[in-house]
Length: 162
Length: 57
Image (cartoon, rainbow over all chains, first blue to last red; front, side, top):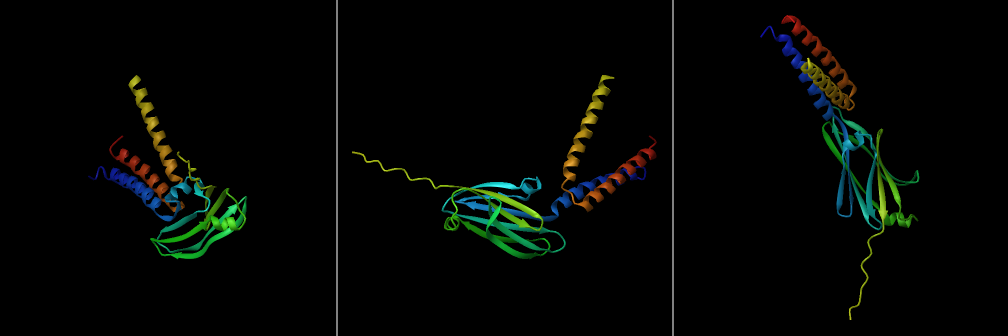
């Protein structure tokens, strides 16, 4: 036992490194966005932003509402406070503010914010079927959702049968 | 001799693979996590060296 004490200590160090990798990976502030267009919900996981990608493509039908759910998970031992902003952009210009809230999240708690984007409102503002960028910002982190609008499918023409 | 060359290749590939995976994981670690892992890694190699010293290598 005494002969191998340094080997066991080395093994303990190795297990400590693995524990740091697991625990450190779990801790942090993570945000998840859910986009619902039509009857289809898409989840934008925190790993998407961690990979360095920050443009999520989403398709929507012109005339429909698009619903967003933003979930911030505070997996830290201290509370988190900050502001969450969601806005719609077109050609690098902000055209609509959708959400601005200041939030305080207790340790190991989750906060969910919801908002929607109505394309009829865009139409009333004089905008047309096109691509729009929805930016979700939270203290240094930014996620962009590229919304590609398309016209609703046309009903088939009636054919008279004689 | 040829067997030892193959062993050498195997060991190098293992070390390269583990090094690559570790480098990928380290990207997502926080600064205190990186420091903790570095200290433990230094301790790991020091203790392994001491172990081999004690058993008479």
